[in-house]
Length: 96
Image (cartoon, rainbow, N blue to C red):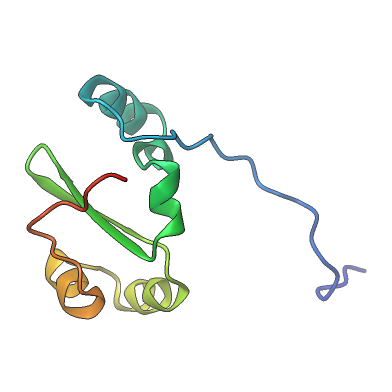
């Protein structure tokens, strides 16, 4: 019988995140192969990251409460990111 309270030692496989922002060619390769790789490591350490590429806004949400709310509501928009998280979606978040 499985104990649901026992710690899980399984860590699902995931691709290594790039250390810096991708150039255009590497961005296209990442989008085509594994979209988790379009974000640099630093983006996964912030609560909400808004960037733009090719005239489109990309939003990465890592904050647990934000994920819960947006999954429950079914979407997140640039306006919601600006309103709720103080992120200016019109200006991409500068790369560190």
